[in-house]
Image 1 (cartoon, rainbow, N blue to C red):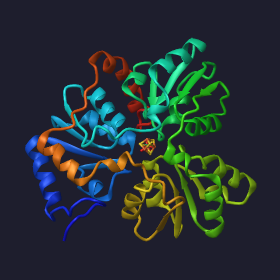
Image 2: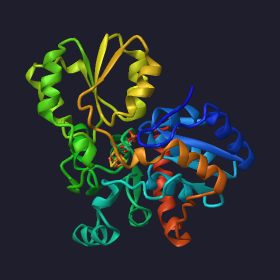
Image 3: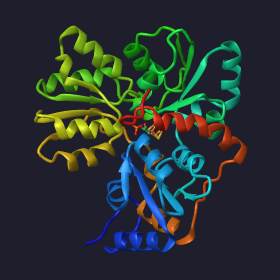
Length: 330
Ligand code: 13P
Ligand code: SF4
């Protein structure tokens, strides 16, 4: 049996054993985001959403973290664990959402709202985190904003769809939202969701709050076209919890298609279908089995963050880690 990837030679059947052996030799823990290729998810020591992986990175006992995800995630691990070596199998694995705001743009926005609390989604560069008061992920964005006194203005960045979700759930109109977006999630639109939901009236809808269709899903629920309790706005980790608990026979999934692998493992009896099968993140898919092996053999690509920048961003990331943890919220 061989493991293959598009355009690459077949990998040896003992690839996974070799990854685990090299990881032991290097004293490394391998982390994989839920959007990684299935074989990477399967070989990793831990697979999860952004928040779960940040927590694991912060608590890891190994001296090296191999982050199978995109660059800002590996940078976040380095900010939390500066004494550890952090490797990413391909340093070019970026993120269109993280690229949608620079530190200069944020500094300028702050001068327009000098009293505001800056809340940044974890999909941001280390330089942006250094200008941030508190970071959040999709699974704790609402709790993070709710932890800020109601009369304080908030600058929420960079994702406009997650920002709209936070404004809606908290009912706060003093949350200003940056107009950034992820090209993958913005491509999952309301028209496609409406068509898929009409084709399968019994299906539940799992929607990532970064999606362009999140507003449509809530609108559909509001008009009665879809029962409100069929629509769930969830982080990737939240989708897994919901998959284990659902009694639905089929679920429509609005997020990056890598998510389907963990969902099918979590609830094999449920049929999970993508709202948009083309919603694949080319950055996430830059992490291939061969590059993971190379990372472990050659110790590359190492992720570094300027110590002063890391020190300025650390408090914001640590607040994110604390909020939304069972028993650790505010
Ligand atoms: P989660 O925080 O739900 O894992 O989503 C992260 C994300 O969108 C990475 O692209
Ligand atoms: Fe960034 Fe979007 Fe890819 Fe996530 S799916 S890593 S937000 S480009």
